[in-house]
Amino acid sequence: MIEKCKNCKALSNKGNASACRNVQCGLSLLLIGQERIKRRYLSQLQENLPDDVLYHCFTGESDEEELKKFLKLNHVLRSSLLDRAFKLWPERLQQIANRLATETIDSQKIVNSFVKDRLK
Image: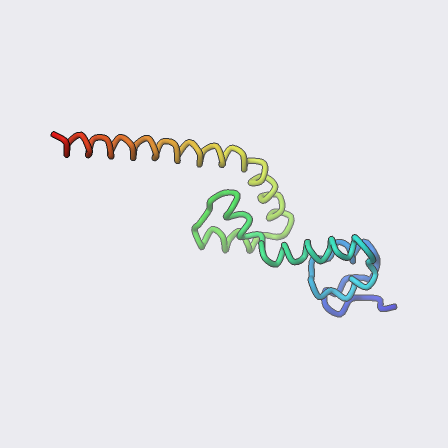
């Protein structure tokens, strides 16, 4: 048995293996059954949705510089910011829904006024 994984450099034990998010982690040999499948899908999900993409989705932040600053933070700060953004997600959805409803009403008013002006 190896002492450390060649890819992620973590000590070879079951806890490190299940916590690792590296798809090609050599520690996956320590896992069996559902744990291996769960780790594989979590690592693929983290590859496809990195922290900056999740932060953008939850907060709507689209400024490149702010996202770069976010990525430079250590993992503890990043995870706390992501947790906070996730908790505020329902409020953000409500704000988006309110904004869309307002835009829809404004658009209907504009169309109605245009049609009334054309019919005169």
